[in-house]
Image (cartoon, rainbow over all chains, first blue to last red; front, side):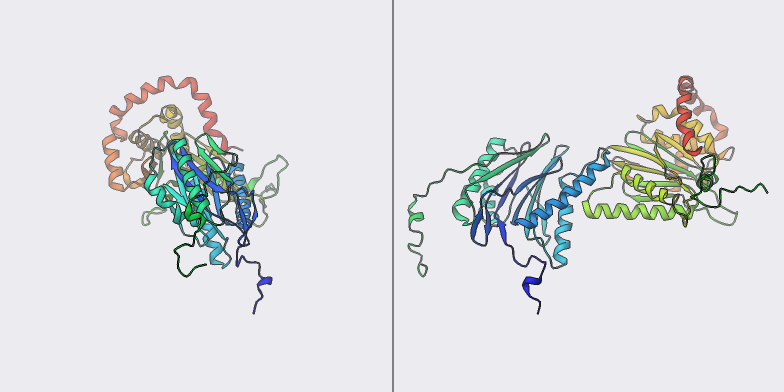
Length: 232
Length: 273
């Protein structure tokens, strides 16, 4: 039998990032992620950038295996470089990059060697907003708001209630902060160092990391197992 | 005794700095029946003259759809033209598989030119004996390119290749300045008149020409014969009935002479290395 150590495949992720949340807003796309890198369940790294601009029109956020994300970034750097080298005024937009990533992810899973990530691809080109997701087995879709991992369970219901098309930048950031706060409270691998970034027709902006104000004095936080029979 | 010593191999230079085999391939383009292309900001029209080898045979197809947004008209060796259009089709399909968007026309043309160029630099290959007018629409608008066997390519407002194409070129050179703002119908009309010019006396009928259009909101398609005949009839593009058509032509003719020099340079160069 093949030993796991001999394998070059990602059979299990090692260093992982948790949720990414992204929404469309009036002028483009807003994306948020924390900067934690978990080694199993140990919070091993505290300053991992998981949102990167891709070319002129796109923003990529990743959860899952960090090294696989770095590999994806290498692919995309090459892709954008070759695109720029044509120097003909054409450029790959968010839709093209998203489809490319879908092909890469699905192709790798077919080789039983997946890139262990869930990716969020947002962008805007010629005034056309685009927001989509791909996961490690190549499932992909577009939506007005997306979230990976636990965020998909915890924040999408909030977004469904509160998201609308004409969110201003301030409203959008406020909504994302609300989502990230819920995740910080309920996702054990979330850390309180968060990055928000936006992309508009003017280009991508990554804002400096910040922390959320938290309040841990709720009585249910103090004694979480009270009334939960059969637990510790 | 006076045999050309420098034309037995594609890669051999003549002392005058010419590659004869490549020039022969360009000559093959001139032998083929005429193909014409012209474009406005939003549309490109391709037209060609159908010539059959004998009374008993049908003519060969000279206009090919590559993708919804790209089509080609060829002059020269039809077989080579079909090989190249198959290549272009597969490039378009591969691009839209990966990016789910149409391949920019200019990029396809560069890839095609590179492919043709390789054949001029390998001793075991021969140049393609076909010229292609590539019509396409992409993000940056409508485009018309001419690809020739030497590996050169040029972008045009309007162009004609193939036998007796000079007459069509002259017509296009006289009028090309208005093409950018032409309507789709006017482009087709000009394509048909230019086609008639290259027929040199033969009557323009839908059976001797093919017309294809690509434009905003209109995927590349070849107009069917009835449509073409109807257009010929409505535009009255018939030699005997020059009357109604002659007037607008003359009006533009007056403005033309000043620019004739520039237009000629644009039309003549690629063929004459």
